[in-house]
Length: 294
Image: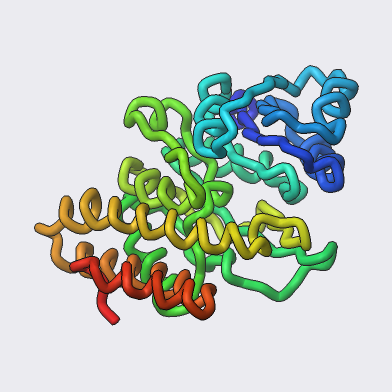
């Protein structure tokens, strides 16, 4: 595939994120690659975000309004409007690194992979931290199941997180052919990533920092109520994983047991973020699952 002809769709959702939105958009416009579109869905923002984007009057931007509310549904809506060969997701309080689109186009032109996985770095209160949880040194071409196994082992051994969908450039044709979708619940990224991998014949993993993940005081990551909601959303997702991945691949005992261990660690880590009665109630729910091991 000619790298100059590869078109990227950058999927961005906006709701009252003006404080960070300008930096997010600027990181896109700073790319040294021109063949892209930015599909932005405004989720009833009230802080002037919609008007700001509208006033940019940039031909790369496709701007929509939606009252769907749920992030997974909004992402699905945005992807349905995308016309690129590949899409990447970008939260409106995050940024992409310089040269990401050029690097992706180079890798795709060589491999024509269904999925390209890259790394992220963490920015906390405007400072880049030494947090390496999104940085994998895995590099090369893999079958989707093979890479998923390696990523699960990285998570189990070193705490490397591979779940966020913003770590991947996804071939839209393959995404639609396999009827993949984000689930309409919190932690929709966690639910999708293993399915993206398992439905990809060829995945290219690159040791390249392409995304800047911003943790700030108003972030969903730091909200206590969301921590509880996210924990129970993860429990629902892991129930789904057990049925649709562990059991479905039971004939491959090594992979099935590995993914079961992955599920258990995800749930354990979620339980550790809860305190007091919330943790007790959550642990009691875990013990009801036949797949959960203390």
